Image (cartoon, rainbow, N blue to C red):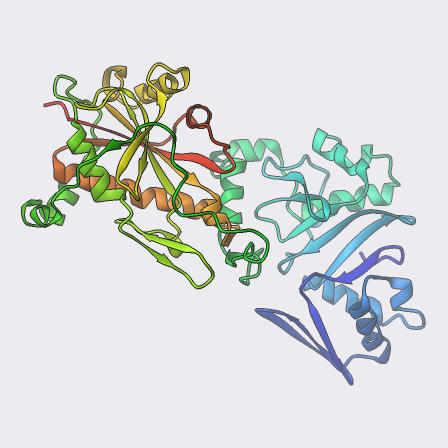
Length: 449
């Protein structure tokens, strides 16, 4: 598939070290040693080191370069730009070793997992399990997203065939009946598969570049403070429990782990009390201390773990029936151990938040107390790349388990929800979803007998 009118380049991140008669290709953790190179092949590698080149530029006097380009393309070392005359159509950019080209691949629609989006370099077509990206240069290719086949793009026949072959080779196309008829592919949604592959190490991400705790924003943006700005209004002071007494009187860890159950029916004639809510919040989510880092950062300590010690989660009790506390939506200030009113109980958004719980509870009832968990995303995203949202959800999981165990030890009922009304939360809390978003919810109260 090497053509004189196409353009070839070392893919981003690859370094080629040349030496007499040989070369070494480096792209950690991979490397490949090339030996027995002819003089034109060595010169071609030096040319590629300087930037993209066509076959004509790489092979002015010898035909020995084409086999080398075939080898480098097959090893995933080169990106290839397919051209229509002097017009770039697309570039295949590998990030892993490609599989063998499928023989006689017929044109097929794009897979349900394939997306076209814009990044800092332009338009790109991606599939979460592919070995390459297809970077789109010619807008005619966007018709593929609308269901057009390569033969309908108005291109010469040999280029239409090349596009169909490259789409199949990259895994961007699929038979719709196969994807919908096979349980494995049908059960995965595009968003779930994308989230899984983009937030984990794999063929696309093999080093720590732009992945994990890179502190990428350190020199550009100030850190988001650990203590959330307080809501206006008079705060509700919460009593602090006697932890020494609780150490002596609490059931054992084994007991609460074994006794923990999700509770979906509550005793509204005997609602949870303000003192119980205060104790639960203190035991599970208070800020115990704050460590100051040399660069001015803040690392709170709370009863549950948090990656990097950032503790981005906030708690919002939505009260319908709590003895000693008027119905409303509150924010828990974990630094001061107080509640602050956020929205009245009769606001449409708070009513919507409570209604979403009826699908979880027995007899479509409403909860005594709904505890919403939000994430101040910037606390995590300032430091972490690619895995920030995945980390937030892991933090939600450990906080939920902490709430479950503490509630069990206190004789309270709890049930976590797998969903909540995120739009109603942002409206009620008066926040931008990109700054603070609802990521979990737990229903709490006095269990029915």
